[in-house]
Image (cartoon, rainbow, N blue to C red; front, side, top):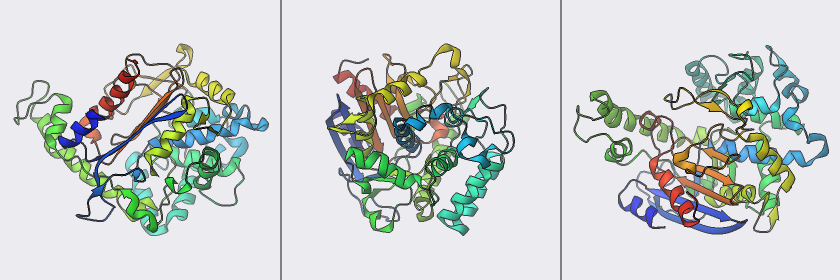
Length: 422
């Protein structure tokens, strides 16, 4: 793919993998650039088809897809309409007893900050991670979800449940499957996605990445060039003189953005982070695995001759997540710049659409998920097309404002153009 080659040559990408499925068959698997395992200063190696990427919130979409497979069981046909507390009674504390599974997975439950405000919640997570180990962290954070009251009446407003989604989804899976083991979603992905789709289990990790796989990981890296950030938002190179900003914009581009990139990349590289199980945040996958999963979604549940869910279920969920005017509600978009933003019923996928990423010919009911830093996956059921991009360069949210990076959008656009989709 020429556009990826140019991005790598310009050093706006380091390592990247792209997987495209059309009509249920693999159409392209392109890899390029370099990567290095976490904790290594100079051991650069070429990205290959077995490279594992931490894709951040793309994990949400993978878990939402696995969750969908439950609907093929007669007792779960109306699963999204069932109350969370009917499966997980402890969740019903603090006036949460009537929250439905759809509301909980669609970022409408009023629980974006479990255990307090964002800073307090994040500090609790860090403390549990460092001093308690993965299963201790899991049990403590699930308990935090249970005892946290909604920040607003559930179902009346939406705000992105960036981290709390992990334990909402995880607690649901533990309860619905009646698993005797905590963090059962790790095995749930293998049983409900990997095995039926014939995906190697070692290509799909909901965190909990063992040390023997470290050399396959393409560690997350800070953005290599500040000029890339300037170009991405149209700022001038000279400090203190921007057409659409000022000195504060220069600070954002040259100091805050790079600092954020270094801190986040360093955090994701920690062993204690990759050993956690965070179904909304620390998935570690090959692009091929995500590509096949979303390729199956785009084709009604089947890819390369393997099926994980019935076509009826895929189409019923697609109909459910369409942005029907009567079901859209006010949404607190991470970008902060969209005052009139509204959220669809997303059932674990992203609750808003992006024309930059999905194109002008955006089709409603897209199965889409984006990860902080620039990775993404989406399945277009109408055109039977899926596009997955996994990358190791972290794109700072402080510069991009929560939006997907322009490089990622260009890759998606190139694929769409090839198929005549605007």
